Image 1 (cartoon, helix red, strand yellow):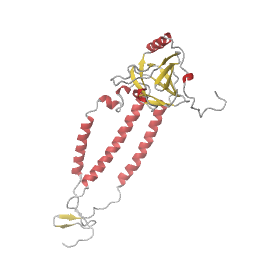
Image 2 (spheres, rainbow, N blue to C red; image 1 turned 45 degrees about the vertical axis):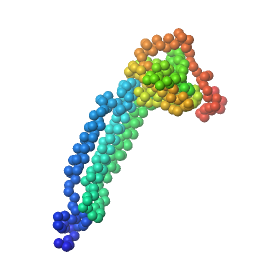
Image 3 (cartoon, rainbow, N blue to C red; image 1 turned 90 degrees about the horizontal axis):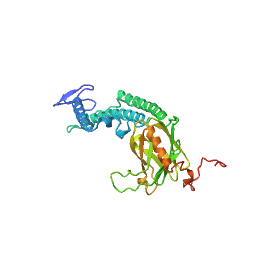
Image 4 (cartoon, rainbow, N blue to C red; image 1 turned 90 degrees about the vertical axis):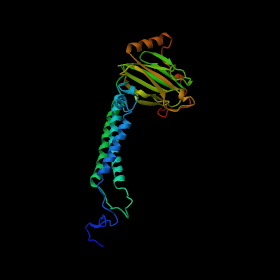
Length: 314
């Protein structure tokens, strides 16, 4: 048959042709390819996830010791886990649709001319309009709720500790107990435990603590990875963290702001101990002559002028 009527599918040899695209054969169902893609994706996911432990899943691949470390960490973990699971689900749907289209509608060796042209798919358009709105609104309220319980936590501290960053060590003033510890720079020598002699910050467990942060010279950053939060320490300004240590243990901390030549050696340890042990430690410091506070008189900020200070203020 040499010709065909509009709107009618005709047989020419062994190929069926659409009137709308006379050079293209009718495609077979893509269900078979969709199944193959699904099976391959499932196998790949199983292989990748098999190497993850239960503890890693629970903390969202954060440091395992973060779980229950402070009154803030579980809030951060919940926000993070909820976010990446939701986004991974959206990504899986998107990647699945893309792979399906790439494979099911790929060009065959016998194809000639252009494929049948389509304008849009209304259900998919609606899904990818409504879903992002739902995600953004959900992330907004979840983030605000987490910030209220962590960064903006202003629970009065039963114990107040001042942490002072300096090039390239740390001073710890235990204000409630009127004792201090003056830290010295750590010399990294390539051993497996470079922080064994680093300055050590003692904090009491199951006690509301207020940590004041400030700098003696340049910008530093107080960071304990297991606590899942850090604060910049800017000369002339004081930052505060209100939290409770819920689990005793030892943690490694460091400066997270490039602060000069020996920035890498500005590390410290954190020991969370019982309240009795904490008080015994501060009494020991006072017995050694470390009573009082290492105050602003030791700062090296002559070059710095606080833009927030009004004329006449001290």
